[in-house]
Image 1: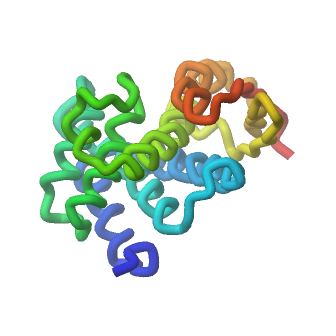
Image 2: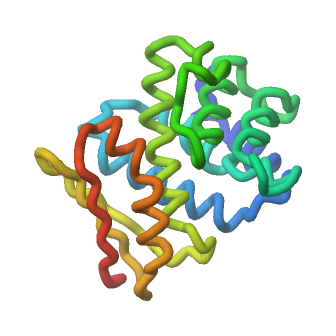
Length: 200
């Protein structure tokens, strides 16, 4: 079944995010920024609608680990996604979504992590690229105040310029973005530049 065509699947994801007391406005804003990165860089990654939907789900669920406290909430999110009966995903989909959510902070994807190592080589590459979008988008909402209203990417030969529209200086968001651009730079082999631009 193509979950991306089934609204009940997305509804289950949203319900779990709300049940786990994550900051719903933050995670939906991060999801929006994450999908903008995915869409603007499609010529670079070439992934399709199923990947986009899995990424959307991971973005909405990335902070559900907060239900057990801030410390290691990224690891808790992975565990919940893998184990909860409230999500209508198969094991592979849970591994992909959970891994993307797990890597929104701290360590980068690694074969020393059992959940990542258990994926196929193709799915490991998929998780690395999709995680890079969520990781950066989460950094761009560092204060959880939605200051980056929108973004656009300009793809160049050796760099990617990310223009972030805001009606404020958004210094903390700029810092947060730079702190979490490591995986995207690694996956694309390009320099990532982030610029705050006025909201039009």
